[in-house]
Length: 176
Image (cartoon, rainbow, N blue to C red):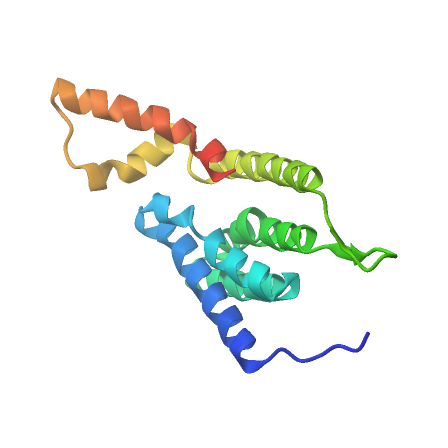
């Protein structure tokens, strides 16, 4: 099959999705970690709309954006936790074949759910390792969040700190 160039509207969508994904993931640098969990959304939108090659291209643009925006470690984290799983899942979700009778047979939903689960486990493992290596675990992240939370001296503030520490331990699972 000859390689066809992408139409300009698809190229624009790929560029926008890659940039939006990088910006969302880059919010981890500002301390707003929750927005980073939406970084895959633009990649999925472009990938499921225009094919897995568009998802892969947007993922590459997002990875380069993270390299420019942050650091090599942040770009690798983006690629491993956001970009590669999206490209794989878009490729698998859009797989199909034409049967002998002319009907389209899509990749099975059970197989796609299994692929998603395995990728989620890999993402959780990668984030757990990175969380421990780079952020110093829950205690290190709590220290980084300290200036954002302000002084916490009352018993109620200590309860909030304990709740945050409990939630931070769940971040790898939330990412998956």
